[in-house]
Image (cartoon, rainbow, N blue to C red; front, side, top):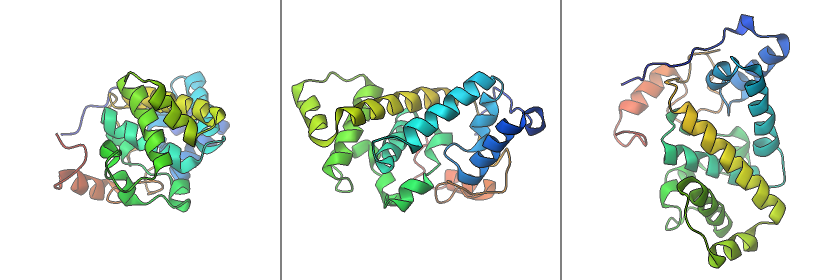
Length: 209
């Protein structure tokens, strides 16, 4: 059942030109899609704080983007944020990340679909999200695969996406509701409102209760 939307979308015509350009970029490129940005637009300082931080930590930086994408969707599965979990990074796909690698994220340690560096990164995201106790072996594992700069960036990125997705989950927003008509960065089966509804109603949907 569709949740009631709790915070409205800011109309595009109410935004200034620079903000409208960012909204069109969201519709064209995705991650994030425009709906969550249209909610943040109620507070322009929050809108730009997120947009700038997301670009700096997710798209730019020293740690490879595909690793960050796996961590982003791991957090989606952890907090059950359907809005975020049903998006995909086009850049990560271009770097070789395969759709089947999203399927076993919550069982990453035992899955053969991830290499040791990916597993280490996901263990880092897991420890942050689930507040796990860590010891020397945990940190030795991370330092084998990542520089300290990469660990700082990845930790800040996981913290950002964990907080945002925990909040977005509450809002009752969905895709194809704002600047609709594009399928940019949507997961397979979510390219339109109709296909998304069918996918959610099907067997094996990842967020089904």
